[in-house]
Length: 191
Image 1 (cartoon, rainbow, N blue to C red):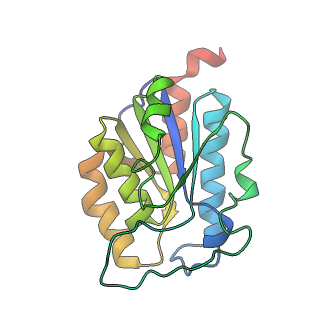
Image 2: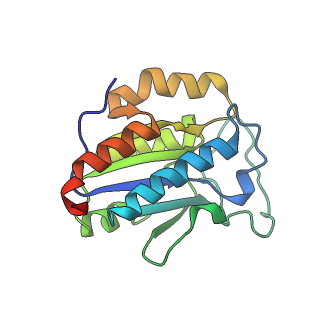
């Protein structure tokens, strides 16, 4: 589906592009995902729009059927990838859940900045990205998902999220489509 619009105050949320997840067996080359996320970051910076960099440093405490003992994380595991070019005014959220809104102050930080719309990318499609998109949608934000700037280690989870979940939470499109729409939405600023 074609993207229809971005609100004037749209934030970019980059989920879990951090050192500790680089070695995961993702179904798409992680370098391509990082490059596309960086393209989005550059476009949002050009228009002085909020950028949220999310990392994960644990798991939620509830019981599950699958063991989730991650133990002591190695040094640097939560460090955001340097390619993202973290800047002092970026919103940085460290989470211990799949979604970036649960148990963090992300919603409040976005509302304080007048954000009404979020664009989401990162890893993993079926967990961190999907949970963040669900939570954003449930909090009343308009949601756009840059589907070629995300990946997962599980092909079925990635494909299911893109085909069946994301269209119910917002609009989906390529990184370039998001950038093009962002440029059209904010063209008057650069004139």
